[in-house]
Amino acid sequence: MPAQQKRPRQGIAAIFALLGGLILAVAGWMWLSPGMSQRVTGQAGIGGPFELVNGDGKPVTERAWQGKYLLVYFGYTFCPDVCPTTLNEVAGAMEQLGPKTDRVQPLFITVDPKRDTPAVVKQYAAAFSPRLVGLTGTMEQVSKAARAYRVFFTLHAPKDAARPDEYTVDHSSIIYLMGPDGRFVAPIRADLAADAMAKDIARHLP
Ligand code: NI
Image 1 (cartoon, rainbow, N blue to C red):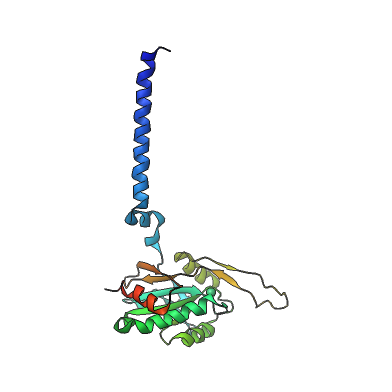
Image 2: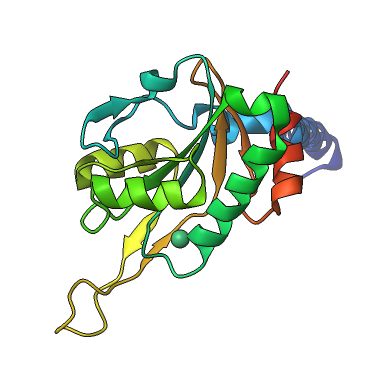
């Protein structure tokens, strides 16, 4: 092929390559910029309405605390270490929030409703703080709420078949701060000590 015919095609190919690169660069920038990546990962869609059962065995929805910030944590009362440690720090953080504490309602939602009956979650939550409310429900209700909050959990088979009630549950350990309008505000790290947790929560409260 003569050189004169080849050159225009190469030119067109180069323009397409340049355009392709530009599109990739813009897409990459959109992905990396904080506002955009939040929309891309759908973080803003965390949470939502739920139907659960409170410590008195009564049906309850998020509307019970309308106008308040919600501090939502999923776990289970038989959890050997992570849940009790986290809830202890949450209880401490609530005390350190000072005057802002009345604007925040901490919720502990079990992912193990089979063992965590209303009475069990009520007693468990109260042992950490009188402010902490424990919630349970049917497995379907709990799973639905967990899905809305992007919380994953897996029930392990009991190690000893003779003790079917002795099993562990793997679960995501993250605290969600929800706004008075029910919208997701921020994730709060569950491994923070009470004072750091209180500061993190407080900076989101106007
Ligand atoms: Ni746990």
